[in-house]
Length: 251
Length: 251
Image 1: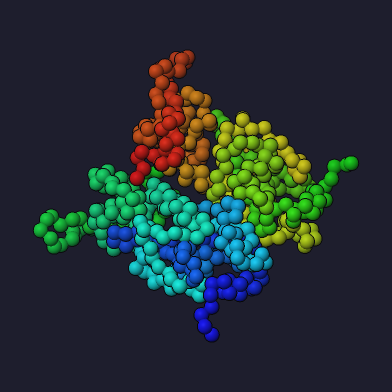
Image 2 (image 1 turned 135 degrees about the horizontal axis):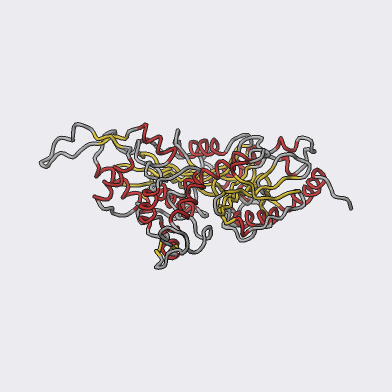
């Protein structure tokens, strides 16, 4: 009953995979985690391999793809109830086969796979990563300090980050990432961390007020020697409407 | 050598499909066509079937998915050199199998397929639709007057239209859809047709100028009793930059 190595675990998985999953379609999840002043991504380190990986897996024969993504993320990392969104299909030739060179050609995992990328943004303190049987680590890794990743997982990550950044232009963001009441500089910091650049304070304020998704609170934050900063809450009704129909100042 | 019916054509296709394509992955294309004051979509009417279909097909074993989509669109409709973009994966159970009820279970097409949706927006006068062997018609159909569609193709169309409308909030649009020089009301009309609603003229002007992708021309349009309207051109350098990095007034 010693700990099995990665190769024998994957070979065992392959035996049932032919029965359980739809061939040729895989799923990779890019879960971004924000808290205070840092942006991280949820990665696993497979046993016996130096590189890290996005949590990924395969689509059950009777599953719709969003259910597959949620199940895979939970199986690989323990993370539950994460709102995952599809963002792109990755289909380069030989994008994954090279990883399995030393395995038999009958291995399930050695087929050509077209991978559907999903992404999410959560408060990373709400998720406690749990490594699965294939991995010896599962962790929130700072995006400024990414390790080498297997296959095309770095390209998938990069595209997810681009998608998240673009999302800031047409969807509200921040609910459940900030305390219920927050200051405008705290909200600006969230945007700056995601965008990886400083923003002009006046422009940020003007644009955010224009989105009309914030309620200014009557009480401002106490303490400190300076003028107490104004506190805001998301107006959840307007926030949801903007998620669904775009911002009021959109077309 | 009489004309074959749809069933025998599909059965013949199935014989080689097992060899040619990756199983379980299909592609459906939603090509929107704009010209002057109408928005259309490119549809095919299969032989022996009342309903219409999006042009679709399968992914070659050695193809990347964007190449598959371009090939399929050309094979099914004759349309070439269309900039297709992925927008969503459609994976509902039994989304396509019901269509093939009266076919043998060994038919390629009767497997479960997960379909990757691609969309594009072109000037419809630049494409002359050509029906393929499976279809007796291939046409630009006004989106206000859509026929019944097979499988989940109406849902795929609806999602593509939603994606196109959202795209107006974060990407420039209109190059190659309007004459090289155009008036602000002509550009506004394009947005109104895509959005299916009237826009306020002053807001449209202010917002569009804010995007900083237009060059105002020195000469205005001649003719007519009233003041000649100003003419604009897209500044292609700024337009391309906005396509790549978002609008200047984005985050």
